[in-house]
Length: 139
Image 1 (cartoon, rainbow, N blue to C red):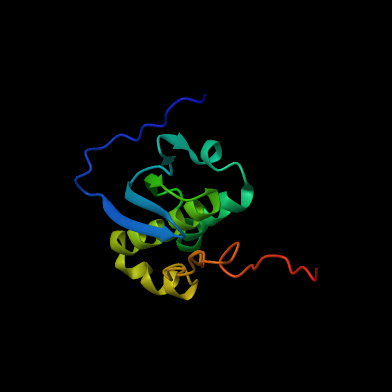
Image 2 (image 1 turned 90 degrees about the horizontal axis):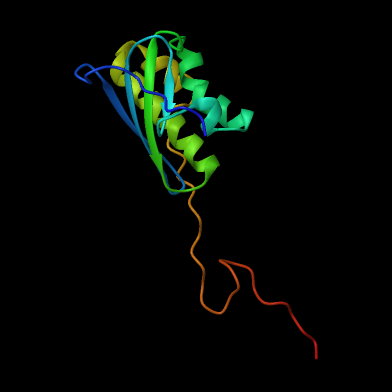
């Protein structure tokens, strides 16, 4: 198990943002710093093994050029790894908007402030899944 990532600070000048995707919820704090990212007390590379998930989380920071200027603290729960990375992306974008209101146009133009509203459809009675029926048998 890797060491815990601890980002120092009192939290008095933190910018907050909440991101949701599928059933995952990410609570994001951004504070001026040196570019550290902590997700549930772990580093970004340790928490998200897949490069696509890491790129999704870093997208708002790279788009605005704030990757080396801010520290990011994320508490994420629920859902799977893809939903969690999408929730982190939206949470970081929303927190950056609060951190510096001049970044709104950049974030909006890159489609980073849009909530992905797709959710899993509920299972219907008499069916195997939401739409999948049982296999047809002629005899």
